[in-house]
Amino acid sequence: MDLNFKNKTFSDYLRIVFDRGYLIIILFLLTETAIFFQNIMILPKYESTVKLQVVAQKEKEITLSKETWYLRGTIDIARTQIELVTNDSIIREVVKLLNLDVRKRPRDLMSFIFEIIEDIGDFYYFVEDWVKENILNKKVTRGPKPSAFVREVERIKDKNLIKVNALPETDIISIKSTDYDPVMAAKMANSVAICYIIQDMKNQLFDLTRIYRSKHPKIVELNSNIWETYAKLGNIAQNKDIEIHMPGNIKIVEKAFPSLKPVSPKKVLNLSLGAAISIFCGLFLCFLIDFIDQTVKHADDIERYLKVSSLGSIPVIKKNEMKKGNYIYDREFFSNIGIEVYTHARKENRSKLLITSTGPEEGKSLLAYNLASVFSKKMRLKVALVDINFVNPRLHVLFNTDNSVGLLDYFRNEKTPDEILKKTHMENVFLLPCGIPSFDPHVIVPHKEVKKLLAFLEKKFDYIIIDGSSFDEFFSLIPFAQEADSIILAIRSGFIRKHSIERFINILRKYDLNILGAVMTFRKYNIPGFIYKRV
Image 1 (cartoon, rainbow, N blue to C red):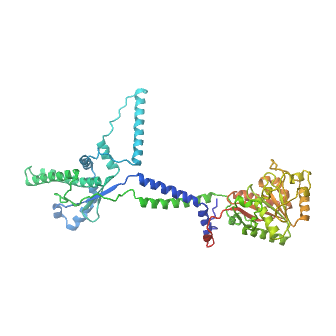
Image 2 (image 1 turned 30 degrees about the vertical axis):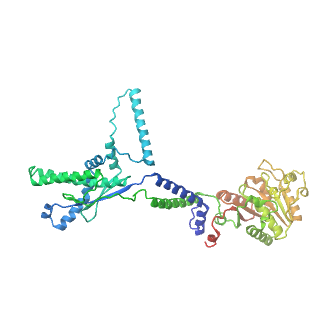
């Protein structure tokens, strides 16, 4: 894990995003697709609002000033109206009036899922009761299933389909109802308001009957108002218009009308929030994966973590670019690496270069092939390429030459160096193939024979490039490493863990070997060039 955030630069963070940008894209597409189908499958809900004014009783003005009563009355409204309006009696009256329990409600995906879950629950209880009665011989007493009327009342209460709010610093309350049908939503809001007004008048009638007789004018008037309001309540069920003016202490300030705009789902908001959350989660996932990733991914990591000079990077190269006759040495990145290696070789009079790696398939042979091209074409050197990958040789494939005879035959004293040396299609480049691959990764190579072979090659060639084996074939690698003047590590981007490379480097240093530097191979340049140049 990379915990050293101080050494991170803006380009490092940008590289993390571009390297794993596919995660952000995948999360974004999955989230937006899910929200899109959710918006389609969920039925829209409509909301209607009716506003009521609670008129104060005159008796309260006798003992309190107008300002004091106004503040106290507002507080009382805010605290009590929700409980009064949404009590069971009013909700039951509305359900009965509008026949909400018998109407056929449209079903969306969620309601369908809940119905399936409910059916599964009913089946479970049926099986449980059957087992208790017929197998365990126990008497089962389970209450009857609630009626449709009771379930509808509970649904309205549980889903909070009727909401009451007191407008601050006023004596006005608003009643909001929600339903799949905009017309029904308006009916429910108006019905709740009128039922509340009727209940308030009934409470007043009860108080007056304790003081006056039944034929008192106030009681007669109040009874008349109650029946008149009941008639208006019936108009709602019959889809007739209702009047705003109501008798009693509670007045309808603004009646509810059907709304054409649904309050849910909020499609644009859901898509926007989904996009923001998916991008944030994608970024978090990118940085989390990079945080726990212990591999060396970029050329800068070589010097930062491995304390080895970085000689450059080689991008991912397509297979068709490695065919015979396709000289990819003229690429800028290969030329730069070759020039830097040659500069060090001339300064220190070194002519034997070993290319190795921690693990297999890290691009050693590709690097050796192209460095030989650079030395022969640009520096006009006569180069010998030695393939010591005894388990999985690759140079003969790149050069398209025969590998039936090679170094393994030389070490068995069956062939001489001249007999196994092959001229390649590159000018001034000769190849010593490894021979028929060995199934034993621990091939023992005599040190004296290695020294003798390299001495022979030094007399005939200007420069020797050894395509070395990996750390897995250490016993065949170390004799050549001890005789080489310089060693280059090929490190494949995002392939080998840092501690494995560090372990290999420490072993090479224990043998007092000269590590010239490392080359990052198969690196992906995901940041666009016009951005990379500016960061």
